[in-house]
Length: 271
Image (cartoon, rainbow, N blue to C red):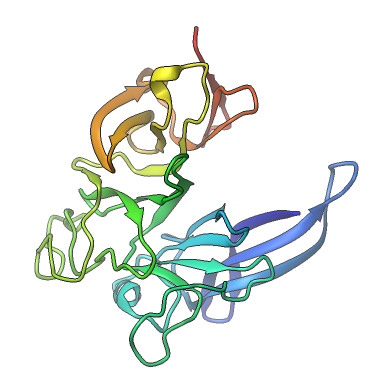
C-alpha cells in the first residue's frame, strides 16, 4: 500500500488530502485509490499545504497540514475545530487514532496531535527516543525545528521569530507566550526546511542520530547534531550545487539520498 498527501480541488478551493492505493504487481500503476482524509476547511490558496506523512511506532499515520497562507486562514492554526496548521494522527483508514490527546474547547477534532503550525514540511522519528521531530517554514525569518509532543501548541501565528515578507510585525510581535512551545532550533535568515531524516546507519559513525534537512531556498543539506534534545552543531552539505533540496531519506545501503526540485537525485556517502 502507498500513502500520499496531495492538493485536491474541492468546492471552496483546494485542500490537503491523504490518499492510499495498492502498488500493482508490475509496479506501473496504483490500484483502488481511495481518499482517506481531508484537512478541512478548503481555502482559495495554492500555498502552505504541509502534507508530509509518517508512520509512527504504532502503525498509525502522522500527517502535517499547513494553515494555507491566507491572512483569513492563518488564525485557524490556533483553532481546535479545524485541521489547518496541525499535525494529525489517523489510522490507515483515515479515522482518528486511539490514544490521541484531548484538546480543550468545544468541537475539538479527535484526530489532532499538535497545533499552532505554519507550514510543516518534514517529519521524522528519533532513532533512540522515538520522539517526533518536525521542520517548519517560518515567514521572513523563523524557520523551525520542533520536537513534537502530543497535545502541545507550537504558537503560530501568536508567537514567531519571523516577520511579514513586507517587513511588518506579525500580530503582537512576540516570541514567547505561556502555554506555547519554543522551537528546539530556528533560522534567521531562513533556509526553507523541507524533508528531514535521522541518520541510523553505521557507515559514517559520526553521523549517527544526526538530523538531516533538505533546504529549499538555502539550497543545501543541513546536518544538525542533537544532544539531549538540543542542537549543538550545524553543518551545511552540498551548498555549491545550487539545488533546492526537497526531501532526504536513508537507503538500505546506509547512504543518504536527496531529491531536488530540478529532478536530481544525490547519493551522500563516505568517500
